[in-house]
Length: 50
Image (cartoon, rainbow, N blue to C red; front, side):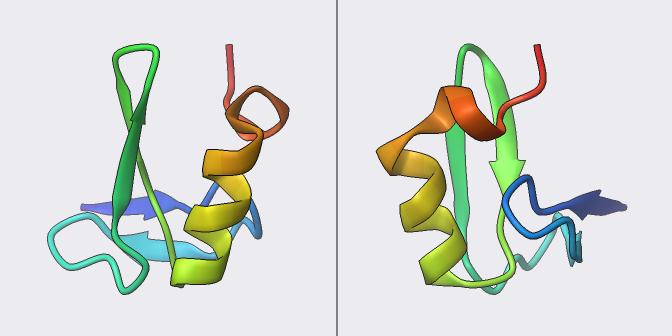
C-alpha cells in the first residue's frame, strides 16, 4: 500500500520505505529518504497531519 512522505509528499511503499519510518502520536509515517526522515524527526509537528 502506498503512503505519502509527509516532508516531500512523494509516494512511498509502506512495506519497503527507502528512508525508513517513524512514529509520532500513535501514527506511523514513511519516508522516501533518510534526509526526509531526519527533517521529520527534528520537528514532527510541522509535518504531521492532526
